[in-house]
Amino acid sequence: MTNIVTPSAGLYLCSRTSAHYPQPCEEAYRVLVMQVDRRSYDDPKKIPANRGTEGDWYTKGTNHRVENGQICRDRCLREEWAVYLPDMAALQAFVDKYGRCVLVRDDNGFCTIEIYDTYRE
Image (tube, rainbow, N blue to C red; front, side, top):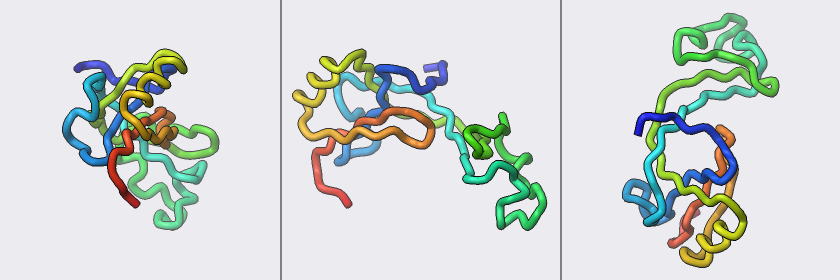
């Protein structure tokens, strides 16, 4: 596992409600994902904690930028489980096999699928 993945059609980060660390399903494989720190400001000087200065925003992370009016920086790589479901038929087959699933788009733009196999709040 050497490549960092980016959001793309058919790629779902995958987890199971009842267990976060073991492989969530037999189709899952490990990927590296960049953790992006996003703030709802377009300039670090506008962050109340920085009190009109840039603070340490630029001393931590890499690739500092503005996306959709939000300041962003890459913080670290993390390992995730992923599945590749190329089309709606594959997604339907996955849900038929594993039962209740929760689909969401996360803050980094990835589609995620959680196999909802136990209660949680």
